[in-house]
Image 1 (cartoon, rainbow, N blue to C red):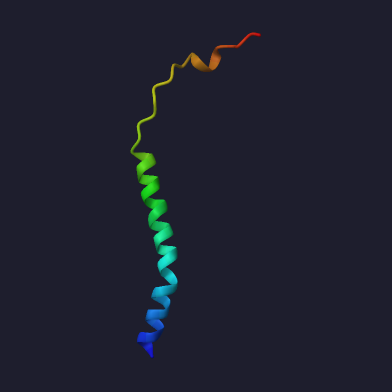
Image 2 (image 1 turned 30 degrees about the horizontal axis):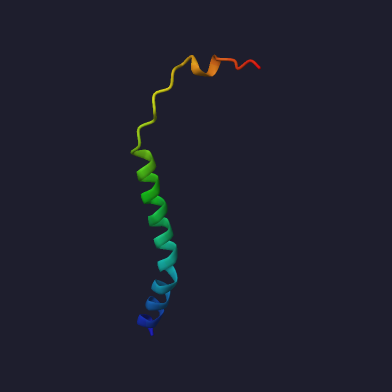
Length: 49
């Protein structure tokens, strides 16, 4: 009986755990990227028509 309950809970939690693992791996991939250097003056340039 306890084995059946544990198997049921395990099957129900697989999708959620897979989703959390996927989000965690995506976060690590994004966090490891280095941002491109941006000039501090780039935000102050006005575009005139």
